[in-house]
Structures are given as structure tokens and as C-alpha cells.
Image 1 (spheres, rainbow, N blue to C red):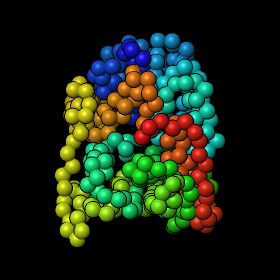
Image 2 (cartoon, helix red, strand yellow; image 1 turned 30 degrees about the vertical axis):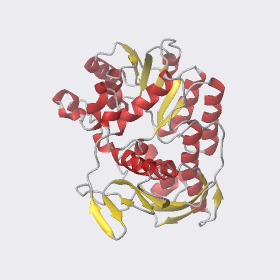
Image 3 (cartoon, rainbow, N blue to C red; image 1 turned 60 degrees about the horizontal axis):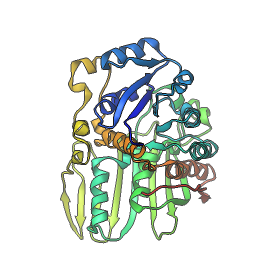
Image 4 (tube, rainbow, N blue to C red; image 1 turned 45 degrees about the vertical axis):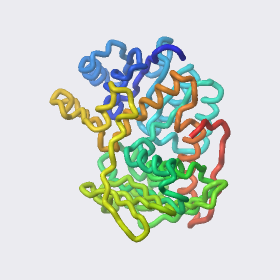
Length: 372
């Protein structure tokens, strides 16, 4: 691109936590913010000294000075906002999930290909320090042959905005699925999934999904590997966890089971608790501190409800750096639109399998993937 990138952040709840990372990235020129609530828009804009502000997404897309849009809007808006931004000539980063139907996921891929702009799924799970650590062990050969992968995401979503109520577990499953597929370096090809338990009828009626838990077994394309992922959102008691386990020939890794514990490494029958190092050194100096520091370390940020989310394994600055670098270097990002399609379709097809009592469902594919 040969010039610094101008970025618009859309949605200033979770999205506001990315503002200082973009402001301190060496290849970002300026920020625009967009939020329907004018009061909240100006509170955030004044706090971070951002003069360029919009309450209208459509009006913002007409601003020709904006190169890229980072979308943090509610789940039902992800597809239409991503497609509109791509077709307006903007590069797009979007929080998960990509969309909640195969049709919309495919429309996003088609819009990305038609526009020639980048689409990146801002999937935290493949930028955590734990993922980067295991990826290093894989790439160095220390793991040996990977034999099996397992992921889980348990989170109680009661009290969250209404569109979450009764959401099928596998419709928001990429935190559990993506690290498995990324470490395997393969697409999910087919899935058999069972639903288990029941949520209250008033929740189940929202999306026609009765299950408290969905657990899926994936067959990976061009591989002898299988992977398992389990997801719950409502009425299942469990401390919050987003985890992945890797079982390999020379060494295996298991995620910590409680927040105050450490992960485990296994070598044969020997087991070791480990401390996973931070990977801030991979980032430009100006944004390294955001892998460990929280915005709520400062009173003025706490007053706005900003947290910085270092609990997401230090992933946020790594995602921003990948998105901006892909634009600046004129290459596809990771994960790109085709990869995001497979990761999202894997969950959508898993839910379809659960509705069919575990019947195997083939996961569709698209072309146009970049390097992983």
C-alpha cells in the first residue's frame, strides 16, 4: 500500500478497547469512530481525542479517506455491515462470528473477491500466547506428529443482549474450533455433532434450538486427523473457559482447567505445569504493552467501562497488527475470508448435524485462501 492506513472502528462497546492499539500502531495514520448513540460516540471521541465521528454507518462508508473498517456491531449485523464495507472499497476486519448462515458467509466471501479488498475475521483464539506457543512447538518439530485436537468454550451468556438468548451453541463456536484447524493446517471437511441437555422453552423458541450443550467431531480434509469441539451458552454450570488441547507424538498440551491454574505439558508419562511466555516481542514496540496491560489500569478508562481484555490471552494487538500489516504489505490476512468461511461453516454445520441426531454433514468449501 506504501502509505499509512486510515481506520474506522464501528461499535464502541468492545470496539473501543481497540482504539489505543490502533492509535499506537506505526502504520496507522488516523482513526474514525462510528456509534449509533451520539452521547456515547462523543464520550469516547473526547476521551481518545478523535475528531472524525459518525452516527451513521452508511454515511461513514462514503468517506473516501477511510481505508479500513473494524466492525464490532451486534452479531445479526455482521454480514450486512461486512458486505457493505467491502463493496464500498474498504478493507474489513470483523469480530466473530463471520455470520450465522452459510448463505451470508458465502456472500461475504463473494463480496471480498469482487472488491479485491481484505477481509479478516478477528478471532482471538488464534492469537493468544498459548496458541503462539503451541504453534512454535509445532513448527520447530518439538510436538512431533499431531494425533488429535480438542477444544471447548463454556460461557454463561445470561444477561447479555437479547439476540444472544437461545443462540445455538455451535453458531458461536469459532473460539473452540479455530485453534484446532489452524494448528492442523487443514479445513474441516465433515462433522457429526450431538446436542445434549435442554434449555428453557422460552430460550429454545428464539432460534428453534433446544440444546444446552453441543459436542462435535470433525473430519479434517486431506488428513488422518480428527478434532473435537464442545460449546455451551446457557444453563450449564462451568467457570468460563476457552480452551484447546493438543495430543501429539513427542509432546502433548492441555489447557488449564481453572483460571488460577497453569497449562500442562506431557512428555510420555511425565507431566509438567508450565508458564507460557508473552509474545509481545513479535509486535511493534508501540503496541507491545497491550498484550498484558488492561485499559482499566487507569481510572479514566474504568469510568468508560474499558477493560483492554488482556484476558483474551494478549491477542488484541496481534490481531490489529496482522490486519494492518496485511493491508500495508498488500497480502491476504490470516484468517482471510475463505478460512473464516470454513471455521464458521464448521460450527453451523455442526448445529445442523445436532438437529439431525448426529447425522454426518459435509462442510462446504470456497476458494481463494491465502497462506496460513
